[in-house]
Length: 126
Image 1 (cartoon, rainbow, N blue to C red):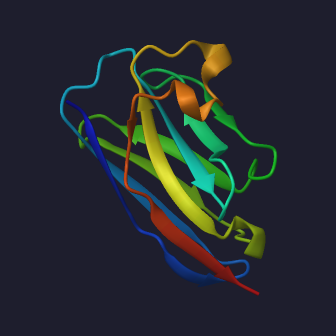
Image 2 (image 1 turned 90 degrees about the vertical axis):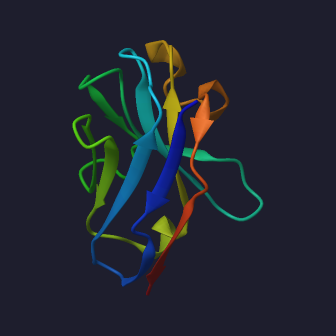
Image 3 (image 1 turned 90 degrees about the horizontal axis):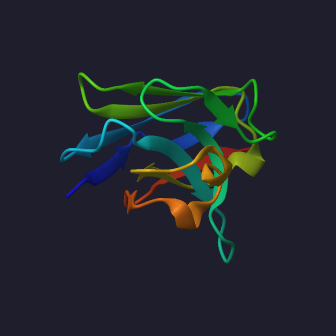
């Protein structure tokens, strides 16, 4: 059973930076894909960034492209999201997710992922 646990959220001013980390425990498959989603109150989870399979190509939502970077360190079993140039509209609860056998066309769909962390709050003050 794979378990995910996020950390690194917090309060930051507009233009600031944060690094979110997701500790992965268990034995994900070699073909697993990882992603970050975020959720605003009363809304569905929104795709932020993903890495397709192990050290595969990365994909980003248009709203974060050029500001956020997803990375994966299998040696330390972590998935990270480096966030720079933060804006108030980035304020949300951020979740990491892992999908065992995703196809590329499903990468941005939150209901295709098998495992989720508990979420971490990111608040950007204006």
